[in-house]
Image (cartoon, rainbow, N blue to C red):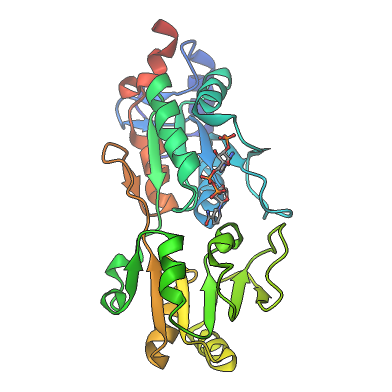
Length: 290
Ligand code: NAP
């Protein structure tokens, strides 16, 4: 193997890239660092955007895939593609056609269909898959005081026992709550279907502070906060605020991630995975030989 320091000088990097006829990944066998990897990120989250930037900064080739739900998505480093792949098979074909070495599923913990498709597509093509998942709120100090439910329908039934509801479940899940009359619904963008006339939409994107969340809960006279276990710190302040004010919380649980999919909590750990999983261990490398 070629030997150089932990940060490869760019001329070494270029020489390596030019000399590899067997694929995109250049693996430094001495350090165990891959210096050029073609990664697809399934994005639509802050973690996905941050990872795209880290990968681009570290000389990797990166494409981020967005579903196309948000009309004006934030800027993302590297290439961006928008729209569904056409199920797990469509994603598998896309991975092979575009010579993808690694797939990082950085989608929201509640984007369950695309995550299931990612597992199937990576199995069928032998592409290494990593999940970035914001740490669950199950270990939040107040978690034991909340009502945990398995679905939005169950959350909606529970919430029917309260008067004033604050919903922070995302615009795509609002349909499950249409039976509730007195609702303030916070979301980034309005859904396509009009909301019930008695509802009050609050169009805002986090992060929020504990003080502003308390003010909101008080001003609206909220009895119950219905939310889902998105996890992480960006939208966590509402939980502290609700706890301080004695507002009940109904929390929708996440679906579990399959046990054989490696999982990390942060974009930095995902960069390390892209850098460190040795090329020779990656089944995706053998694709052409099957
Ligand atoms: P979903 O229910 O799991 O996915 C439904 C379908 O949308 C998938 O089968 C796939 O279509 C397409 N899709 C989803 N994410 C995609 C992506 N990143 N790139 C290309 N196609 C994608 O997903 P969702 O809950 O609608 O979420 C859609 C996007 O919004 C994701 O990128 C997610 O990270 C983001 N987001 C979701 C939430 C949430 O609460 N669900 C919150 C914040 C952000 P095909 O089968 O045709 O490939």
